[in-house]
Amino acid sequence: MPADDYNTLATVYDWIVPEALTTPAGSSEAFLPYMEGVDAGARVLDCAAGTGSLAVGLAQRGFDMTATDASAGMVERTRALAAANGAELDVRVCVWEDLGAQGFEPFDAVFCVGNSLAHAPGREARRAALRAMAGVMRPGALLVLTSRNFEQMRAEKFGLRVFDHVVVREGRRGVVIYSWWLGERWEDPHGFDVAVALVGDGGEVETLGERLHFWPFRHDDLDDDLQAVGLLPEETTYEPDVGNYVVTARRPR
Image 1: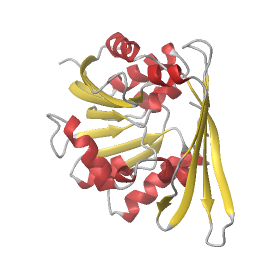
Image 2: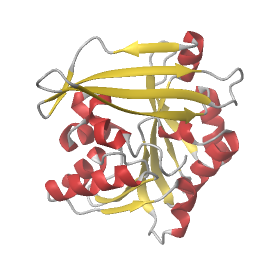
Image 3: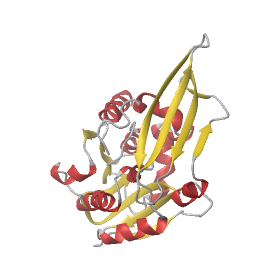
């Protein structure tokens, strides 16, 4: 995705994620069940780190963490969160395709969460991103990724959602607004507008948001993509009527 995507949204990203995932402790606790066989001290990469909650949380639990993101704004927030929590981790601005050029030692686990993979523009770019992730994994290493259920999203077609409650983060109040529109074909670019209207103590409103593009895929397509780059799918939480799911895969030994 373009490197400047999410830079504005980085400042209000905490309002659009579930409260339990806004803290390092909560985020790491949510994903530990998917880390079978990955022990404390293992080398772990979060290659769509966002604001850094997961990377910092795993670092606090004893993992040797590296965090990358295409957005400089997100990387800045990850560094700030790490400093505030006394966590040591390597944080870099890096797109997926450049992971292999970073000189990383092979990782025992790689995370790509937060519906990030859909920002790769189409199947070939998506496979290139997954191939780059596989390329920095040691044999037997684990990949954990999350995705929105795009079959469900396309069935709903165009959409507008204004959250029916005020979201409070660190004492500040905000209302989250989503709108999205879909391409005619699966392989066409789709659009997603995200905005957070921050409400001041005097009733004033400041709205921050971004227009994002994404290229959706079916659950079966993702399974094919993983196998195409040499990864072996293991587990999935996919259900047709559930909005998001987790997939794990391994690099063969």
